[in-house]
Length: 195
Image 1 (tube, rainbow, N blue to C red):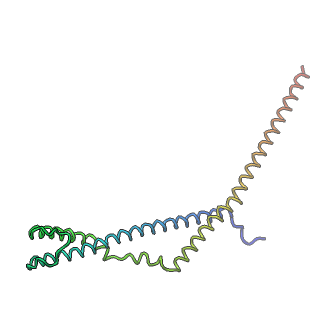
Image 2: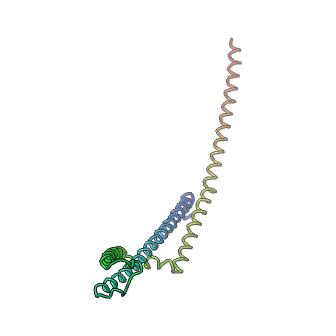
């Protein structure tokens, strides 16, 4: 006498197969997130580079403008300003460049103030890498074992039963055809005898 009922293996194997599929979908989402994170890091690096470049240019421009305002015209000259320009032209261009660099500093300030380390810190942890590999192995084993056993124990058996059922139906049809043939033969014989 069994105390516990048998586990319905068809549902068990389907569950394993679907669990593994969902786990692999989770792995796919993790890779999508890592690719997005890589894009975010690249965007942040570009913004940081622009921020520091604009800030350095802004400092150089301010030093040159201060030199012009104090009357020290030969100090803090900038390489990109042509030497044949008069002071008014140079001041006007320097003010415009100062405004543009100030905008660049303001636009890219977010990259310097925020940190992405909290998002990437766990990726360097060996425990997380080991857990990720175990997760991947469990997902793959679940998929392979679930679909393989489901196919072997249920699908192949179902196909075999259907083939046997078709053979049985064909044999039944042959038998019925044979009986009809005999009935027709007997009925002709009886019909002729009675006449």
